[in-house]
Amino acid sequence: MITYIVGQLIDLYHSKKRPLLVALCGAADVGKSTMARTIVEKLLENRFTADHVSFDTFLLDRQTRLLLGISGYDIGAHDIDTAARSIGNMLRGQPFHYFEYDHVTGRNRTEGRIINRPQIMLVEGLHTFHEQIMPYLDYKIFIQGSKDVLNALRHTHNVHKRNMSPSIAAENLEREYALYESQVLPYCRYADLCVRVTEQWQYSI
Image (cartoon, rainbow, N blue to C red; front, top):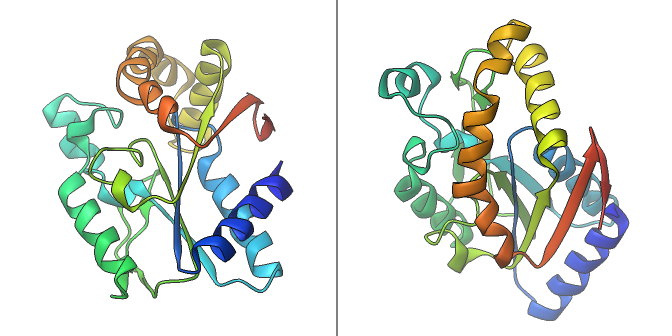
């Protein structure tokens, strides 16, 4: 599957003859960042310049979200205006100062890196297909899965990535799945490619 996606992006780059922005969208913890990293590695092997960022860099810190009573699924938990401006500036050739979101601490790391526009740039996250981001996108990949699979992945990552107890990790699964259905799943209709996750890091087209 990765080979197919990379082939699609290479063909698209040669067709458009300009830098590309590729978005991966889908529920939390379906492996968007892992897939983005793998695609970038394969593009680099094919002698393309490529990089990826997480849309979580535009996410309010966890403490603020808790005080506001909102989930990371809520569109209001993201600074969409800054995201659109930053992505637009990067595509116009301005350096992007990237501070990765830390899922353990719940806030952006203080040490960042500067990204200069590569030939193929990937951005992954919950709201990468938002209407303010869509005009910049050249190729859109949506990762979907059944409710049971998505909830199982979310619970596992809440425990191992966010250091929650199993009981706390399970508390909000139903509410967050409902938010996914209402705020993220509708983006699927805009995808150029829909991928189904069947278990952790296992996908089919």
